[in-house]
Image (cartoon, rainbow, N blue to C red; front, side, top):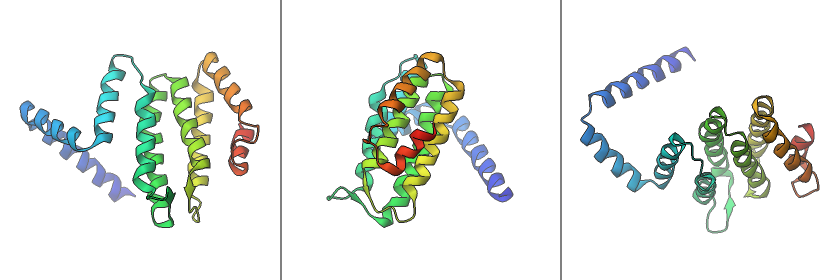
Length: 183
C-alpha cells in the first residue's frame, strides 16, 4: 500500500509538471483531439464547464450511464461474466468521481437522482452476477445515500423520502429492495 501511494504521488507530480510546462496552444490542441475521440471525456468536460456556471445537466449523467451499459452489454443486451466486474467497476468509479462531485458541490437532489438511476439500472440489467458485483455496487450506493441523508437540506431529504417510499412497492428486485428498507 505504501509503494502504490508513493507511486501515485509521483505520477500526480509528473502530470502536474507536464501540464505546467506545456504550451497552452498545444494543451488546447491535445484536449480537442481527446474530446473528439472520446464521447465520455467530451461529456465530462462539457459538464464540468456547466457546473462552473452553477448549471447541472442531468442528461450528461444519463448519457454516461447509458454509454457504460452499451460498452459492456453485447448485441444481446447481456453483460457476461467476463465483463461484469469491469462494468461494475466503471459504475463505481462514476459514482465515486462524478456523482460524488455533485454531492460535494451541494447538488443533493441531483446527486440522489443519479445514484438512484444507477441503483434501478443494476436491478434491471441482464448480467451474470456470479461474483456479486451488483450487491457490492448496491452497497456503495447505500453508503452514498447515507452520506446524502447526513448532509442534505430538508427539501432534498423530503424528495428522497418520497422516492424511497414509492419504491417499496415491489418494482425494485427483492434483494435490492432491502437496501431501501434499511434506509
